[in-house]
Image 1 (cartoon, rainbow, N blue to C red):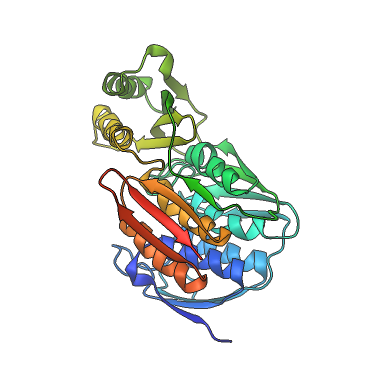
Image 2 (cartoon, helix red, strand yellow):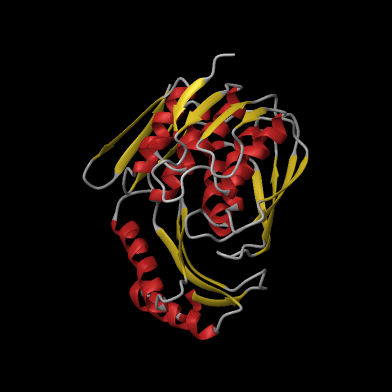
Length: 338
């Protein structure tokens, strides 16, 4: 069997996850070399390895190179089987990245799937469970995907220990969708999540967000969550427009003032609000693949990131689509065409 030859050194773990997803969806095997070559710790980390093993498990696929630290992977998928699955990352590695890897394969499967994932749910370098539930899955519903995620327990970096359950229904047809305008602003709400840490940290974060984003007391929420295996703090800002919802997140760090964490989030929110873009930079990266599977689509975003461009190049190797982007000075317009 002839395999696609892929260069993993042109990006991070997203290239590997996209390759796994597209391989499962198209039945095309691949050989990827140089996986995460430019990262401080190159090769497969725990969450990448879990995604690889999960892709193999749901399809009866064949893999070579599936070990921690491996920079080369050979993967040949079989047919994807719907059902009930549980995968345990074992660290704070992102459960959401594993979910995003498997989700398109399951919506193409013959039957409903229930998937339980254990590990990190709120990680600084990955979409968190709230983002998936509030922003990513609602966007996919517009494309025709029927899926939901339930957060059982929070797992913050570095301890992890969280759990989520996802349900995915088979999708008969994906719609070519345009995310061009977000509509009028409906509301902005800020939430500080606290796990086994002083509530004063969250109050300081919310004070800054209230001041920077001109929010009332009713728009600010301090929420204690049941500790998983370690302490954690995340600050979430939910920006709802008539036609789209975005969620922005910052994470508490040892040695970083709560005010600094909140300032970073407020700056990201302001940048989005001051633009004419419909979707944020992070969602833009994640919409490309489902749009390509739908055979087309379009969205406006704040910037064409390196993640977006490298992911686009990989998608074009698996699918007969052309992905283009251009700026009109106010936003980037990204198109996926057959």
